[in-house]
Figure 1: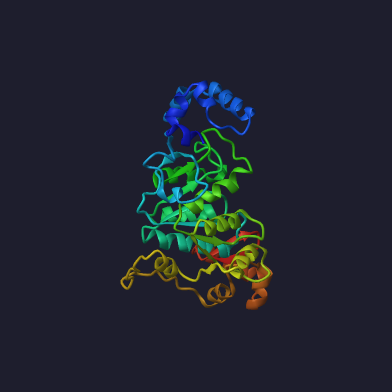
Figure 2: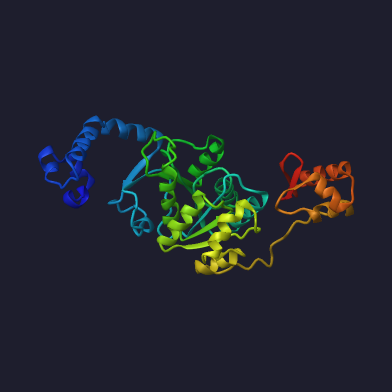
Length: 338
């Protein structure tokens, strides 16, 4: 209402009490709250602190505000940014998923993100633990760009264990938020920020999601915004895939290969006939153990039973396979393909 009445944020800031009073307010308390906030806010101090931290602000009236966001009905009135924003002609895909993901989910998050990076498709996500952070690291490692939408101020790294990713995003993309510097990562911020993740993206991919998860909120918002949604299918009965399988049941697209994404984004597939591949030669027993592994972790005893080898023998082979980068120990004595 203030923007409609005054035209620009600058005019709102410079307006006196009489002019502000001419705007229609829901009630008197709302108007009083506006003046309290304005009186308590030191604009010059806030500006100087942002400058020191390398943060810039753009309002929805700014010409550099992302046009993709302007297309959604509840776009944020402004963005606080460190690093860059996606360019208008930049193809962007969001990858979101479970924080406590499986090796199966991590494998596909890495695979998709790296392949998209090879086509200069940037990745948008929330820098969360699990699928989000894994995909964003893979995009950067693959030579691409990634952008994180935070549920806190852009000067706060949350979660703290993603400090390395946060720093890499500043060099290979950016971090952004609708919340001012210093804002804490409050629970209700995260469902709100999900609409920005989908809003900045041409397509959203969901990799592992429980029945009730933030990833499903992102998917629902993406559909409301007219974005394509694709889902990595999971095993029936697997709690981590329950949300994904429900989305598929409701008509979401099934992710089978990166070619589908390229087709939807109208990007021509590259010719990789000259790509060299590295092969690792395995001994017969190593190959036997590796053949029974899946992206879903198996415990040591199960592997021993399937291979008819002793647990001690299997354990030694698994160590060698881990040193080759072929196997990961997800939790103690539970192993999966990488």
